[in-house]
Each structure stands twice: as C-alpha cells, then as structure tokens.
Length: 87
Image (cartoon, rainbow, N blue to C red; front, side, top):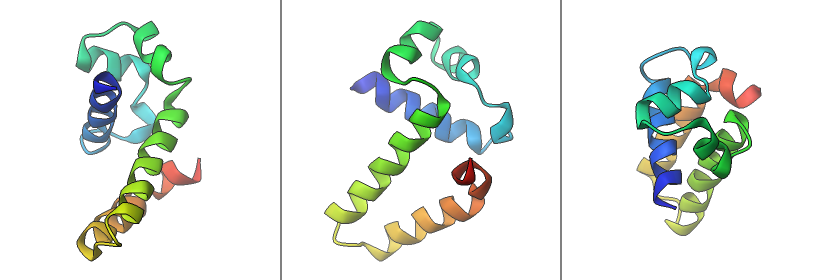
C-alpha cells in the first residue's frame, strides 16, 4: 500500500513539472528507483493509476463531508488536467 501511494505522489508531482503526454511508466519508475514490473504489480497502466487517483479524491470528498476547500482543489486539478481526464 505504501508503494502505491508513492507511485501516485510521483505521478502527481510529474504532471506539474512536465506535459502529461510525456509521463510514462519508465519516468515514474526512474523517479522512484523501482523496476517497471514493480509498477505493473500495482497498476496495469498509467490510466489505471489515474483512475485510482480520482477514486481516492472522490472517496475523500465523500468522507470529508464535502469540504469546500478540498472540493475546490479537486475542481482546479480537473480543470488543469482536462486532457488527462478525457483520455
């Protein structure tokens, strides 16, 4: 579970530093110094990783009683990454 969280953190860090189209499994693995098969143990591909991140955000919104500041940050993330969401 801890490594899954680290993978998510690295992906989120990378989307703020480079175009999302250039982020791939290798770039995440390089950042974490793990093998590609380790990534694939947790996720089938980048899209499954993104889906998992959005599921985390959604669950947190539900559990946090719709905290407005958090909702605003999710909306801003979605707006800034609309190309990622649409794929």
